[in-house]
Image 1 (tube, rainbow, N blue to C red):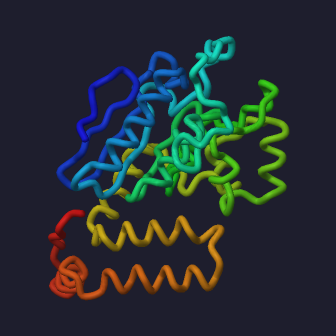
Image 2: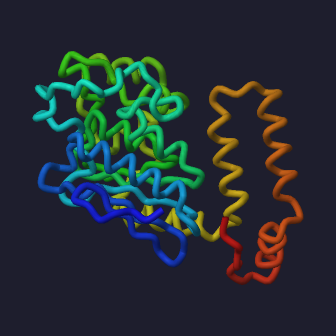
Image 3: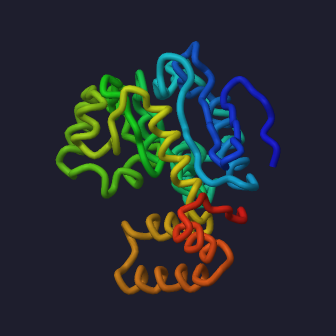
Length: 268
C-alpha cells in the first residue's frame, strides 16, 4: 500500500527494512488534531501491508514527540455521522484508541523515540510501542484529568505490565508531569538516552538482522502474554515454533551464526 505524502505523518523505509515514521506537525509540537488522527491511522494501515518491513522507529519532528490533543479541538462539534466512542470501528478499538493500539497490533516491533513534550495522547501513542527510548529531560504526563477527562486512547490496556498499579493511579489522578529519567524508574521508558532516535534506530537495526518470521512470531506471543492463560500460552509457543523450525530463514539464521557472517533472509 502506497502512503501518500501529507503534512502530518511521513514514512521512510530503509534498505534494511527499518521504517522511520515521523509525526511532522512540528510547528504545533505534533499535537493531535482530526487530520493527525486520520493520518496516523493511515500510516499504521500502510505499515501493516508494507513488504519488506522488519521494524519501525516512531518519533516526532521538531522540539517534541507529541503534545497530546490539540486544545483547539476541544470545542469542535462532532459530525453527525461520527461513530460513538463505544463503537468498535477498528477491531477492538475506536478511532482515538487505534492511533495508540495500532503500534502494538503491527506485526513487527515498534521502537518509540521520545523527546521534548510527551503529554496525554502522545504518551499513549508512545505506550503502544514495543520499546520506548526517552530523552532524560523529556516532559511527560498522563494529562487527561487536567481537562476533566479519563485516559481514553488505549492507555490502560497498554500500561498493563509496565507501571506499578499505585504509581499509575497517582500519575493518572494528579496528571503530574515527570521526566524521562522518572519514566524509566516507573516503567514507562525502556531506556534513557540523550539521542533517542539514534538509540532507537540501533535497536531496530539489530532486530532487522533477525529472522523476520521469528520476530513476528515473538511479537504475537508477547502480545498474548499479559492476558493469556498459561495453557494457552504454552500451546501458542509450540505452534509458533512448529511453524518456524527447519524453514529456510531459520536454517539461514543457524548457518550465518555458525559462519559468523550477516544473515540473508527472505522477507515476509
